Amino acid sequence: MATTTRNNSRSIMSKQHFKVCFCFWRIFRLNVAEPPEEINIIFDEYSHNGIMSLDDLINFLVNFQGEKEGDATNKHAQTIFDSLKHLNIFQRRGLPVEAFFRYLLSDLNGPLAEVKHDMNCPLAHYFLYTGHNSYLTGNQVSSASSTSAIIKALKKGVRVIELDLWPNSRGTDVLVHHGGWRDT
Image (cartoon, rainbow, N blue to C red; front, side, top):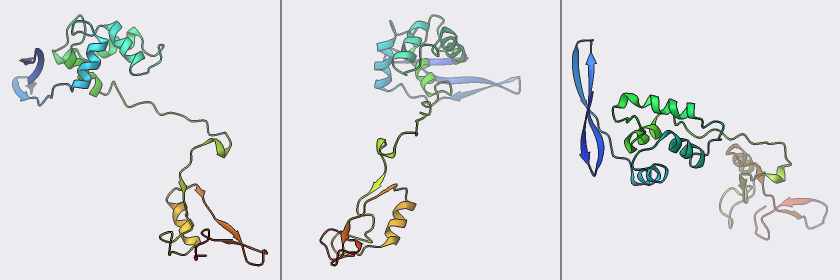
């Protein structure tokens, strides 16, 4: 059994009564914050007269949450409604904003589904974490080029390495050289 208080024409649970050891009642105060304004705006957009019906909830799940229409069924919405019955703020005809807010924070509204990417395209089709001047051991002006700097960048997750390749003075070999600077 819960008692509620009125605040800004929306009810908020302030106390919750629980039976302890099957014979004693214990009262717990709940530190329940009001739903943020963003939640109230979304709720008002998808509900009618301050109550979200089963159809309103399905509309919210499909159009706002991005669930597929086949996944957001009456049965799924009814499961959400049934899970909120124990809160005593549930009303038979629909969800008030407080119950909707509790649903958003509940396990029934888990994190977004993990996106599976097809990684079979050529490497050039992907955005990659890259390193600019990865071969430099320090700043661009006075540092030296080194393979250890490249190894360090690869260990940090860089997958594309920039190398400035310049021919040597004889034109017989290639140097990793920071374009016109004195490091090699």
